[in-house]
Length: 258
Image 1: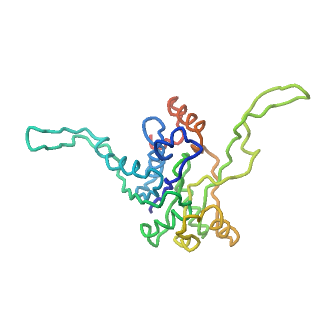
Image 2: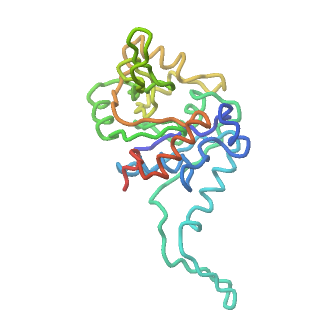
Image 3: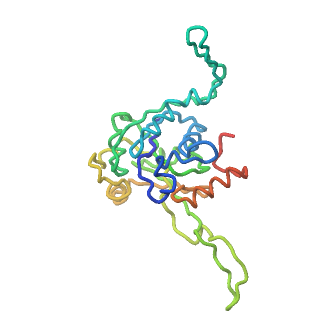
């Protein structure tokens, strides 16, 4: 089953980094968040990726073009016939198709433009800026049982601000906003049937989360897999710092592959 990853947006809300590189190439530790997302999928055996490039897509292409070399021990023998010997290969067993889907193209149009690389089979899709400890096998099983055209992962993110516990006019404590305080939101990590392409068009203004998903919802063809575990997007610099701190502290709930 192929995995489509949206990696072409401008990343304007994290412009401190995205003016140099596309947001999916912003690092956690020493690897882009795109790498972390792909490691989550490959942990469950999904290793065939179609990446929708756009803004600074050449950075993503160059990363994968050099990936094998950078992740291996190599000897360059210039005294012989300019031979290169790879001693240890720690690269991933990935198949990666990189598709230029346009600079200003919206999410739905990007998916529509990679249709020739998908074929008539179900596929997974997610955004290039979010990590999770989601069980992708459970997601896929629920989708297959439901008969829906699309199943998205619903999450309940905590508030960006702590909540005050009060007693009259006194503050008695501080706590994070409970998940039960908010509604479910779209956390990505979707499974799609090929019928979804009939709800999309190639014009760059086609936004997946608007008419296509809203239409599927009205028709009763949009399902939800409720994930109560860890989920975090990297929408802002504050989000990036939070993920980096988790990585540096060794508290990495999305690192399922360890």
